[in-house]
Image 1 (cartoon, rainbow, N blue to C red):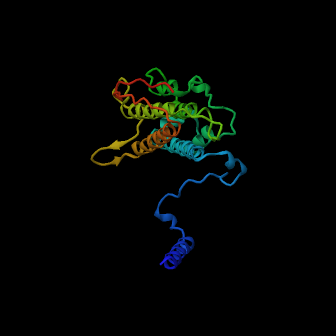
Image 2: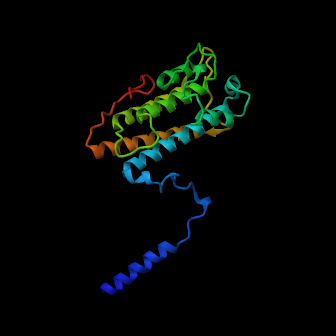
Image 3: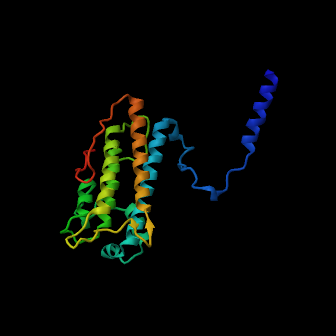
Length: 241
């Protein structure tokens, strides 16, 4: 019986090893880090690698949101550049540029201050820029200003949890903040008799889910408590992070 069980296990393992990968059309491939085989992976824990993926995927979501916002609000793009939306997004997120996430066009504001500026009635500049810059720099601060993590790094789960709530508040502001004429400052989701587009909401949902998951896993590992703050999104101020 033991011999049969061993033989059966070997057959199953061999079948798994030889099975072809699923076709690309079946869905999005699992994210892979370009440095996964580098020597620095030796000084990374599983949670470090998860944090790497979380910040990378959230950054990708912000790029997607910025591109979609410019396509829905071309007049905002025209306030910043005559280039395409793709080039603008590439420039903002290009790590080799010299702006270091300091943009004089938005008074060098970052985090929640930049998000508030996007919906300030007196602001006449490109509203997409401060909205995305605010979200990205808020995430970066909660991660200690890093996008790669090692054993010596410490990410506070409460900061991540608070940022997830702030993303929810920012998404609500995007879909509800209006000017004196009752017009949305920025067009995003579309829900009417002719069109049903909730892609913005889904992207924000993915960001919240990733950030919350990492926060709770870090809290569990380090035996920390997360203070779950109950608040109304419509009236809540942004939380400290």
